[in-house]
Image (cartoon, rainbow, N blue to C red; front, side, top):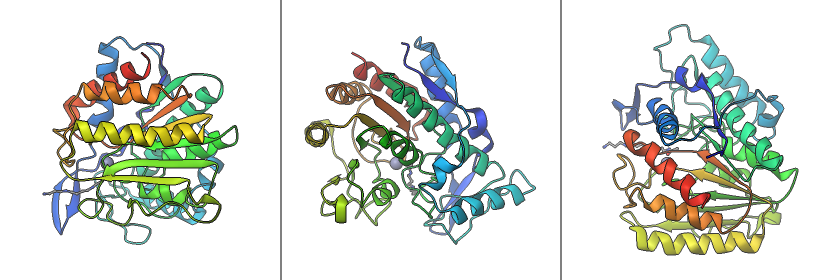
Length: 319
Ligand code: SP5
Ligand code: ZN
């Protein structure tokens, strides 16, 4: 119950109302209520250690993202006068799901601050920390926004921790973390392992196949476990154990988890069949690594169940 849970209210000012799906405006799945629901439920469950994010220098972000990309998001956000206006730029964008609003830069910057605040707590000796990051990050690449992501929170945190030891990233969001994979694709000091839906059928389509294993010095330090649409707990569990055994062999000093709850059976955009109590099993498997663990919130869109899943992950992890 003394697990630090890091939060910033800046995310509330990034609240897209719609995304464009094949030319049609549809309600945006990445709602601000997601993080508020997780926070509210964890308070009800008795968690007490809520930590406000601290502001970190932008230089942590420039190590991962192109300066011109960061400035583009800052200038576009700040140039919008109307808080309700949603801009869909094409340059630097990979889809029509990821608009820029007036509050987007500040929210995205502070989402990284949430991750870095957690990373610094882990680096100072905390066993577990949970960053309530929003907007999410794992689809964001060095100079590309997409999949509701602008800055790659997990990548910036992992890069920060890599100055102090070996880092493994376990990405269990329903979607492949194309941005995170690409950012570390040529590095051997950060091991990226992901379980996700088969990219031939769901976003991000461009990556996440099992033959992508890294290049150059990074060869062997990327590992993908694509799973079919409809995957249920039994298969997921076996695959998770495999993924974790690879991390064990890598012997990391820090574990960063890209934590998506869109693997839940009732998620509106997912397509796996994991029940709420199964998240305790996932947490427990992660705990066997016995490695300081930073949880970074990614996706998960069944708003009213997100707090329960967060609670079960933390329960499993801290047993
Ligand atoms: C962080 C994260 O989980 N990002 C996921 C982004 C996936 N976006 C896909 C959007 C597809 C919209 N689906 C509309 C279905 C209409 N029938
Ligand atoms: Zn996702």
